[in-house]
Image 1: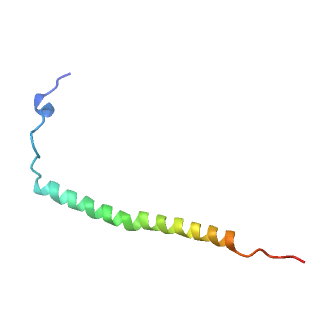
Image 2: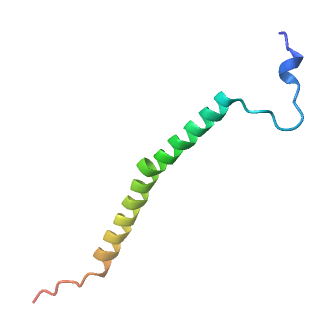
Image 3: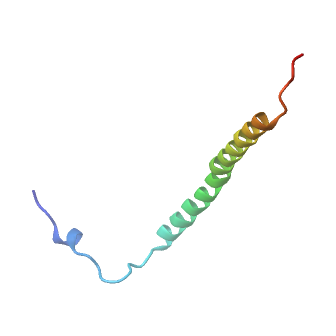
Length: 66
């Protein structure tokens, strides 16, 4: 097994980001922002509705039968 030392050597300091990498990072950031609206908010809304329904069911007046 041949190991090249170029891949193993760590560069000191922060590596320079190319324009292509910067565009890719911005694209991923925008995708993650969209994901918040399509996944996280509906999940939070569903949890809120479940809690509200539970509280409503537990606190409604009981029917009294004669």
